Image (cartoon, helix red, strand yellow):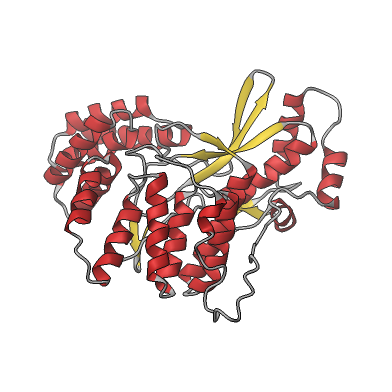
Length: 384
């Protein structure tokens, strides 16, 4: 089974076996790391002109309609904060833009403005493009999530999220289209415009990959890596597209590049293991390494606990969750699932206590509201 990554918000889209967090990046790669990879797949060597097939998307382009919108609806005077608040109100207001959430709205600011629809990435692009037009420092921000994997065919899916980080004087604001309720306690990080464009190219490539078009998907992943050569998700996806197109040696190098950037990337290790098994190689050492990485990854333990709960085995889930909490004691959803396992075993007071801890640890208002709702339901049931 191969795994690949895709980033969109809300609807689970990033395909992995485990989120990478267990180790720091060991090295940085430059775009020259792509020099040993073909520029195109599915063409004869003599047909390839060796000219780079680069795909670019102007994620933050502003057209005349957007400029007109700014000039006519956002007041020129006032503070930066006031202009920003007015702009955000206009974007959300159905009488003006009133964007609809669409999971596969994989495009830039212009198209989001024209269609009045976006996912978290295209929404962020639209906000940033317009905010910069009014002189506000707005940037893309990657928001870590507590992974919740699900199987779809031969992949595992888990969600990721992007929003907008804005600085006005000494104040920091976050603008979010559809705030998720399972934000991780790990800190968000500002990413560059190029990294965001690479993410969009990765999304579009993943769509092609899921439709059985690895050769075309490869062009998107390769173009993304030219923008962000340290995106281990793109190296992983590049490897999947190469493997599915029959370029196994190149696929292995792509997975190894992902591991150079992040040695704890369980998805790259898993795909490398699958590849080497298929080639008839001895994989004992790699299997041991993958097991060691999984045993140190609290998010993989959390995922295992979800599987045990689905199989109605709360005691096994409890064991995994206690190990996960020992490694990562600040993840609210670990306590929520542990509370569910306690409820399944009839330990209602313990479950309530765990949910109270989870409320205190919640990383977003949406997450806090979801946990508090579950706590209120449980308390009401116990008092009835």
